[in-house]
Amino acid sequence: MSSAGLTKTACQVYFGKEHEAVRSAVRDFVKKEIKPFVDDWEEAGEFPRELYKKMGELGFNAIGYPEDYGGTPGDVFMQTVAAEELCRGGSMGVVASLGTLHIAVPPIVNHGNDEQKMRFLKPVLAGDRIAALGITEPSGGSDVANLKTTAIRDGDHYIVNGSKTFITSATRADQITCAVRTGGEGAHGISFLVIETDTPGFSITQKLKKTGWLASDTAELFFDNCRVPVENLIGEENMGFYYIMENFQSERLQLCIMANMTSQMCLEESIKYAKEREAFGKSLSGFQVTRHKLAEMATLTEASREFTYRVAARMGAGENQVKEVSMAKNFACSVSDKVTFDATQIFGGYGFMRGYLVERLYRDNRILSIGGGTTEVMKEIISKLIL
Image 1 (cartoon, rainbow, N blue to C red):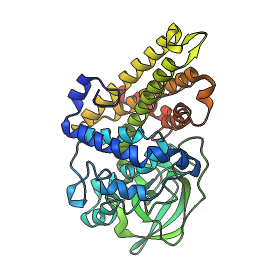
Image 2: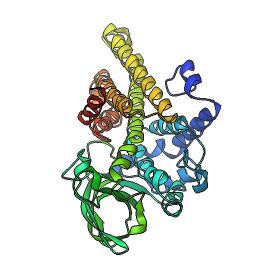
Image 3: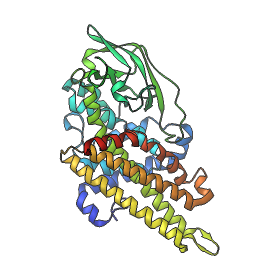
Image 4: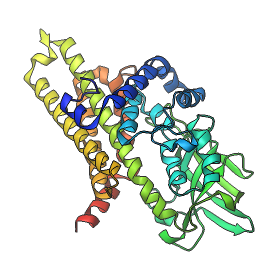
């Protein structure tokens, strides 16, 4: 197979020679620059900032973004192969932090002006700046329409007050694509500002301690009378909620890919372990209960991945896939929930031990059905669109 767990037919449908060239390049990068150090980064709770620059120098940050700002031409599947191979590093925390640009800069790409793209997009693609997205608040969670952080116009500036939480890359970000309230209550009063983290009045907490994604730096953000230039407003004032909803589609696709790769790697580790591990005088794979468990894991993983690819293809063709990507996220996460559980069960006590990939994936997996919109929110979206 030329791709991660894919059949030859699937590769021919979605991936061509250029895609496989990118896959190979990212795979080599991961083997050299990520895999040997992941355990240390997990313990440290972060990875070296230089990794962003290395990614930028090789053009990996830039895949699918406009060439005028340092981007590299590529379709949705070019981004997919890069994301899948980064997952092969074995730490979804590393993937999450490296990937914050893909949720932070799309609003700038889609709605920013040329000057904003030069300031806030080009250096991020080059790996010289780190971009994060600031939406979730302590009081709101998934209730984006009722966010509380305010931005009051004062001449040529907005005065920003409030806070954000669970922000990936927060402790090292140079800029935050931040959702703020510039108008009245509800969805129609929200805007996007790019807030640079050297702005007076901006502060962060210490890194939040998490169950999984240990190598990602996550923190709370605080804004205390931060004066942000009006020129940092992305798109139109009070249109931010619609930009957020647009952005969620690509973020949910990214989470689908992460969930599917979590399942794929757990499946691979389980097959290998079942062949090697002996119990009661024969290998675990010699027991029907193990073989059937592996067969079910493989079937679900294949189905989930194919569903994700189909949705990605339609998104790449410009089709509205709000319902379908919500379905794909829920399905991919339900599959990864089961596959990580079953993989840990196959490994027995070793599946509960640090140092085993399935143990880390089991922990890292839990956030996937929460981030980017919870399972329950996805079901609400789906139900509204089918009723």
